[in-house]
Length: 111
Image (cartoon, rainbow, N blue to C red; front, side, top):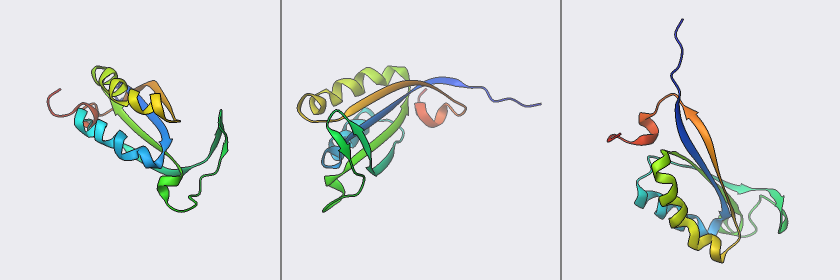
């Protein structure tokens, strides 16, 4: 019987207004994360009330969630890079412990 070997990593989820998505992806690209998933037009309720997931005029008018999985070493760099956006604008970030079966997909070729 074959089993998966799991490797500890960190998942970062960022929920921001769509107009700030490029700022976040630029930070992640600069830090050289191996990939991320973007989910546009999300809905939810938080401290600013209910937010519908459909854009009124364009996708930049709605909330967007971006998810990435990285090595622990990259977490502080990402948090420092994203700090300015959370200092000025609405949004939330979650950092969670996760385990992956294909470490090389998330840590890059040098690790």
